[in-house]
Image (cartoon, rainbow, N blue to C red):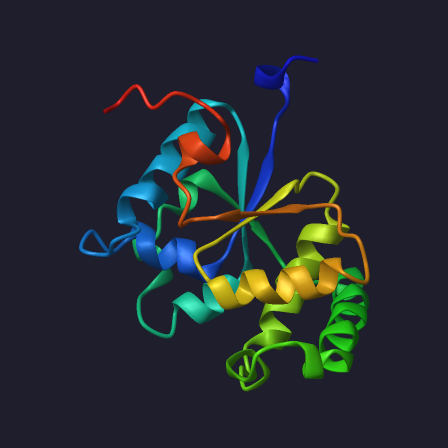
Length: 167
């Protein structure tokens, strides 16, 4: 199977959704680049009901381009895995910076990590949140996950080693 035939499954977190709908945000262009290139490559975008709930705090879900995403509900198998991942994070509080230990969002990060890990089709987790990435690295140090982190701070073409033909 060639690189172009490999289909990715990308779970998009709340930060991606927010940047996608905020043209003034510095990461808006990267968000649009990921959306455009992933769809053009026939890859599948997933969005968790957890991310949708977080997004709905400030905007209506109907404002998102939901026709491009598969909604991933939070189920029992995700709950079991989320508990395991959260236990790892909480047991290593002394190893992480205080601004992360103060985050009440850690459980949502681990819930969505669990969804990505339990869902076989998901290969990547797309986030703009550097603290979320730090939590991922902490989890990776103890329990290998099946998915990789994609940072929205890194443009699509850089993350996937492709030429940027739009510049």
